[in-house]
Figure (tube, rainbow, N blue to C red):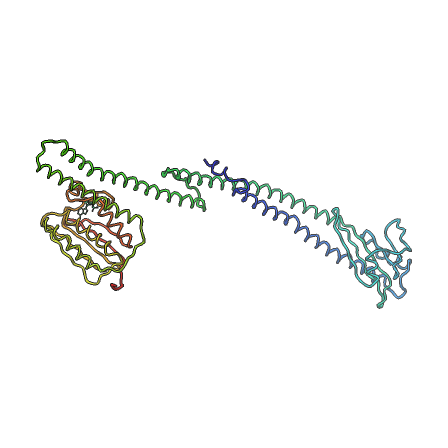
Length: 477
Ligand code: ADP
């Protein structure tokens, strides 16, 4: 799977190729620099030191030669003899016209001829000349200075030196640098290959995992190693897949629960209508009773579909057109609507909502929330019981509480009552016309408006639902 994930990428587009090439180009640039710059600098340094030493040697000779009698072969020869061995490859002295008076080159026939050297010509014009070049591992340097006496140029001294020693030193450095470069190149190429391989392998793993999940295998997870960006990506991917899995499970359960809930009343309707149709001698009262039951089941179906539609609308999270709504007004309407039901089951309803307490919501949504909670308080109550609705602003929030003295919710069920289709006592809920969707609608509606709802068991008896909303300080429009 890993291989397949990366194999589809063309070679030149692959991240691995780009990574390795970039790495190699950078390393090559560094190595070229390493192999040239230090050598150029050292060469330059040698040139400079040669210039100083050769020119000063030539100047010493020039000042020894300078004198009122001018330059001639014998005089120059004597002086040069006195100066002794200079250690240079060649020393040449010319007169003012450039004719050679002295030359150390053995067997040279330059004596008495013109010295046709660029440096000599420059020196005869009064300039100090120097030239050096490095080739075949040796420095070849030449310098020429004028011999002057009282402002007059009497001739020129030309010196020439071939230095292989410094050249060898430079070659040594060059070789060492080459060896170091080769090692660096091999190590970095190997490392870049290893890293890029590891990178593409991990990317391949990620791609593979994405494909597996795309095909519906939501339980698939990537093993996370290390703490780099790719591991973070894998972590995020796992979290995302986890959420997908949860959502998918919720969706599946919802669909199966919903179809089950719809199937039950439909089966009852079918059974009742079949009984009427198949029984020829059925008395009118029984027919009346059965049709009544069919009507009840149809009403139940209607309630379930209405609730399902409400939940779908909430799931779709269509834009909310909220406005400041006064809690008291809505609470009074709920009380008014549920008073007959409460009376019928001998439950007392009590409201305690201050005037002017506002929530940013739609009137219908707040009505839906309060109606469901108060209705539950009545439905799951006992004769002689109470349902109370309080509201107040507390710590920058609007807190609405619906308390009852009813049957209560067992500890083990308290966490599940907001789940869709969850009912503690199925028979009781069914008898009271419940669908198991009321509290999910309450929670989803509250959350849609920035609020939330929680449930608590009351210490004595009954249940308390607490709805909170951000405080809305705007005036009613
Ligand atoms: P239903 O349509 O069944 O009332 P709800 O979602 O409104 O569905 O409530 C879910 C379940 O929570 C109910 O079936 C009931 O068992 C339990 N319940 C809700 N409100 C109360 C309450 N005030 N007192 C006791 N049990 C409650």
